[in-house]
Length: 256
Image 1 (tube, rainbow, N blue to C red):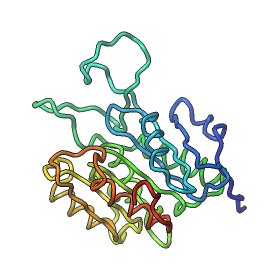
Image 2 (spheres, rainbow, N blue to C red):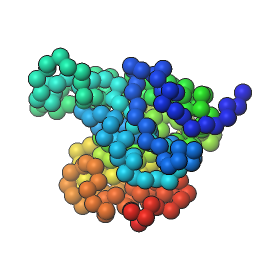
Image 3 (cartoon, rainbow, N blue to C red):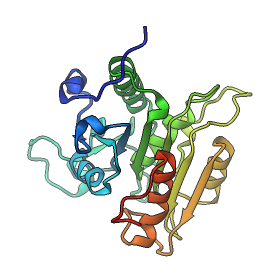
């Protein structure tokens, strides 16, 4: 049965709690929604700032859905005392592994997050309940959230099945999320990865894997050394051009 497309409401996501929490940022008016942008924060962050970021982008007709990480981050990893209060910091990994030099494993596994986001949120709510298609959905992720977004897109292959696009800032495709079957072809979702000139996450091997797994993989290296959220118009512009292209619309005047 074909489900009529409708704009999701807050109530549609209530059944996902407590496993998956979201915060919505509607276009004005909400009925003008023609596409959906899923936003995945970085390690140790939460959904609220990314809902604000979706609002600040001012993409016409785009409903922003900022998603909270699927696991709380232990306060000790942030140098904070454990006072028993609810966590405000989350991550997307299956596990937390700290190396001998104190660094976290860059590929902690994403099976739990992938299952909840893809099966419960995307297929369960957006596709089956609200009638949207995968090619109506954009994804934006920062750091570990960008890894998840790219991994989800890498697993959608065959025919015309693909997301509208993915933007990842400082996050590379996790090898653990690359499909293992042979003869699978390349994923059809267009992806844009932006990173600093001295990024440890997006290195030559990571770029090679992206180009190997995606038919349309675009890489932008910023002039600054570090990864991070965009800090200037020069850093924002490639992302906004990509989004405007994928939405088949003009960039909002504030960015053009």
